[in-house]
Length: 303
Image (cartoon, rainbow, N blue to C red; front, top):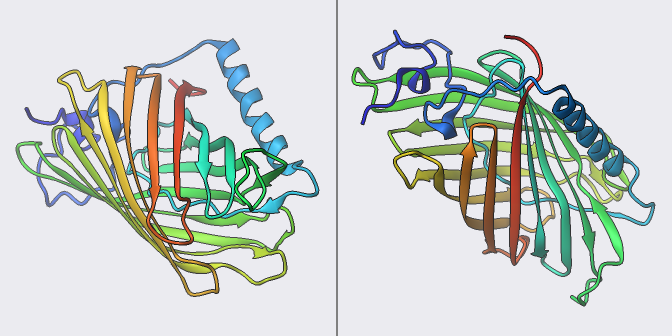
């Protein structure tokens, strides 16, 4: 079945691979579903309160907290429509290289600015146990915040609207919110995407320079990842998701390599639920974990 015009290219009249117009699809994972406009003022206020609470928790973590470095998670080529916002929350239990931790939460907050520009904020907070692996949580760990812009560059579509290739960039500063972190870092990613009727692939290639960690220098390196989404039903409500990602550090930090496999359920266009399993394949990676996610979407402004 051909991809609907609004999903394949963002404009129904763009029907060939040579049209290099930076008009990226606004709802990749929904494969052409029409976004639902939400006008509930109470829902908007609750969303803003939840976002503000996350920021307060991250900034006011206990003094004894230690800096952490999350695994690199490949991003997709999904742009929120102008005025729309999505809060992607994950909570779960993860066994790190040394200690067990409870993630509460890992989050991504995205704001649609234009059809090709999205503002993002990524961070995490964990309750972590001692390095001996004991099953208890005795301190809080906080990750640095990544404030980023995701920009759509090019989109190519074949004449039958069955395949789309797109390219974008995501880049921005890494803010030193982790305990004892100093200085502002940076991260940048080149995003390459391919979509067919039920399959979406996203390849990420980039580099990072984190804030100085505990006076021991700045973690820096190169990162790469592949994100896969496969729709499982005709209504495109159930999807199988997976990723493989790695970070090769040029600093003294241990390299990372991990894979995930999960399932996502979209009962409506306004919310999604997910269950993800994680397995680490390198010494610097988390060993294993299970995460439960919820991703509500709201329309904040515009028509």
